[in-house]
Amino acid sequence: MLPILKQILQDLEPMLKPVYFVGAWLLFLMLIRTIFTAIADVLKRAKQMHKIPCSNCKYFTNNYRLKCTVKPDLATTEAAITCPDYCQKTNY
Image (cartoon, rainbow, N blue to C red; front, top):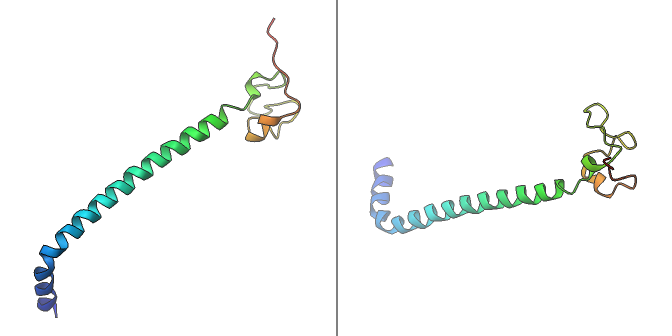
């Protein structure tokens, strides 16, 4: 059985080379596409996270135990983007 299979593969080798070539390029292009998609997702997420206004709020304590004195469950999350209690810090 094995010698017959080996002979069949040797006979088909000239026809399979283009298939291998195209398959290798498809895998390479899929890898490149995946990398660019991951980069785009990271940039989109970073833009969303930069919209969080907590660090400029006067109720933000910058303490890991209690980040916000008014709404500690929302502090530094995406839900804080529309926080109704946001109040701009005033520096004197």
